Amino acid sequence: MGNLAWRFDEREYAYIREVLDSGFASSTCGGMNTRLEEAFAQRMGSKFAITFNSGTTTLHAALWALGVGYGDEVILTPLTVISCMNAVLYCNAVPVFADVDPDTFLIDPADLRRKITPRTKAIMAVHLYGQVCDMTEIMKIAKEHHLGVVEDCAQCYLGTHRGRMGGTIGDVGSWSFENSKHLTTGDGGIITCNDEALGDNLRRLNCQGFRNATAKSGKIRVSKDLFQNPSYKRHSQFGFMYRLPEVAAAMGLAQLEKLDWFVSLREQSAAHYAAAIGDCAWLRPQQTPAGDRNAYYTYAVRLATDAIKWDDFRRKYIEFGGSSLYAAWSLCYNEDSVPDIRRRVLGPIGLDGRFNTDRGICPNAERIQPQLLQFTTNQKDEEEMKTEAEFLHQTVQYFT
Image (cartoon, rainbow, N blue to C red):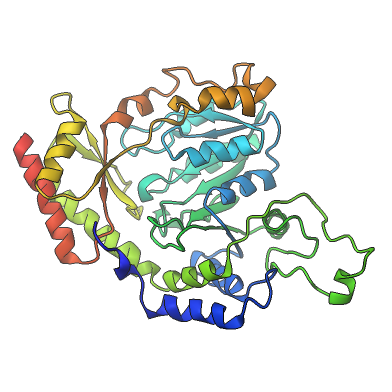
């Protein structure tokens, strides 16, 4: 899409300059992280927000905090970035894959229910491409079976389901700050929750289990005299080192101030693509339920015809002048990492059949994954949007 520096302005430079001018006075409690967390929690309507160094470590910590451990099962979609599956594996737990709805491309609650076993501990709802899953049904299922729910909102900022913001419905919401997302810090992530005890746990997981870290604050030196006492026990629980650097938090704070604008641009871009497709029967955009809001991380469309090859469509689109057109990831259970996972990660629990990667376990996902076309939605203005949409229109006309 060309130079994306338009996403940054003097605000990023000003906040980063604040951090640099501070001389990194403390590496254990960053003021800029606190400011970003407070602003993000307020924007999302959550009580607590905690920054992390990636949108993968957020998922890992969220599952761990919900009690997911050795041999437990977590149900998720196979049509997603492999980070989601890996976060389950980091907990020594077993990923169990539920099929997707062929129209929304999101996890199908009916198949999710079918995949529940006595070992199921949690559900990961992935709000793919910017659209929120059917959280009404997912939360109903979770309540019936006493399951934790993590919402992966890496691609879904400000998306809604029945008037509720994605990421604020389950137990924990997780966002990514990776460079292609609606807002970015280059890399990083953030989680939200409303339960203080859960938030305390998440914060301690974030910073090596320091005793004094809380949902509200990463400050660990409550009393310098106490902290430096040789008999003081600093760590009250096991933890990781997942903190977000202060410079990145400064950038995130500036980006957050522009979030509504960023999302509105992507919505406008999606509207132009929709107009370009028109009534073409063999291109089927991701279906958004009436009243819901899709944040359009990308504009996802099924190439629902055998008469046109995916590669041919992409090649012609680029020939007309279109920017990069992306494929969907291979389904998680089809990746070449699976044998290594079964042998070296899961070990004994990888041999009992619960880590099911057989062809046919998610027929809808297997059918639509090779058909998905992902169009960029990060154009900076109306002119770029119209130009990109015109290339799509020309491509549709060529194959019609």
